Image (tube, rainbow over all chains, first blue to last red; front, side, top):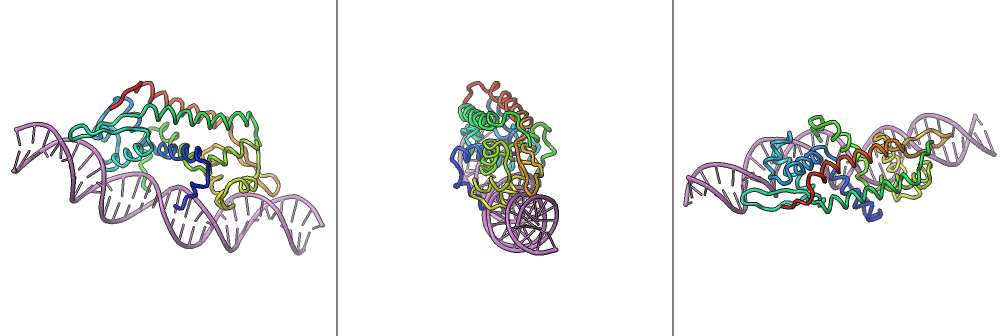
Length: 110
Length: 110
DNA sequence: TCCCTCTATCGTTTTATAACGATTATATCA
DNA sequence: TGATATAATCGTTATAAAACGATAGAGGGA
């Protein structure tokens, strides 16, 4: 799609990009699985998520490109773990956004 | 796309759906504009956002379907405002999700 | 009534997503 | 070296998303 993403403020772009990484239940579940196991390889995620290996790999790529997880090569497999710093930053980004919204609109209705 | 959304837990589906509503910078900006003005009509948003009227209307529909804003007919125009309850709920949903992730992965790397 | 304003919807085009099977590349192990 | 395991990538298909112009419909004023 021809998104006019460059016409918007950079902080909104960043938040939107990372929100998009969170916009699929499989990716949310993958994050939970990684968190639960602390670190794991792709195959373990495939066992827990009702999707084909190639699809899981694709979702992992999206999460990695959003900077939410890290993957390091470990022999024949790849070890995935969360990126705690990025997640904390994202959480703060969201909190700032909520603050902007909710401070100003205390309880207004229309 | 043939999303297997029904194969995932309902809370993950709900969070993913609302994250998707936040996954475009225009929609984030629209939320900010509404919050700033407390309530406003579509035309005011069109003035603030670099998109055509029909595109803004489409984004408003997405936000309304996600339950994040409300729109009531006001004469010839439509008055939009945030849904503070829904936004608070969404924020809590996110916070629960962050808690799940970050409690378990204190500072693990791979 | 006629015109004007406002916004939703329609139709269209372009691009992105989701999903899968099949293939490829890289390591480890025998 | 050859076989196996692991995961990324390729190719394909189907569907959704983003954007716009044009149109339609509903109200309010002259």
